[in-house]
Length: 124
Image 1 (cartoon, rainbow, N blue to C red):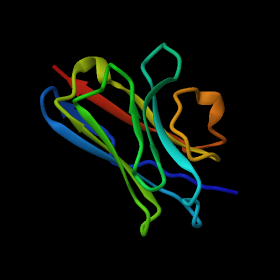
Image 2: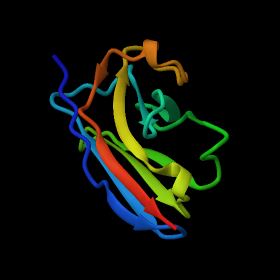
Image 3: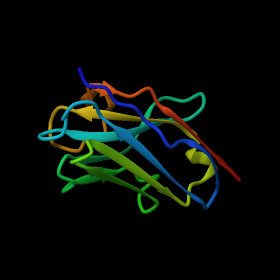
């Protein structure tokens, strides 16, 4: 069983910055990949970013490319999402997820473990 717990969400002004963290129980890195997804109010869950355990490969949704950065700390079993210059449309519940294979993909169905989510609200 893998346990993921997101933290770092909250209220941020547009143009500010916020960093989300997602530590994982156990040593789940290795041949895995991690992803961040988000669910805006009244909408479905969508892909934001993904990274391989080594940090060598990343993938971003066009909507966050150039503003958000995903990173991982193998020693701490933690994946991060640095959100710079957030916009009101980035308001959502943010989830981290683990993929059992070490390839970065955007499909939610390709991830097998999920955290409970953390709310991010961007004010204009």
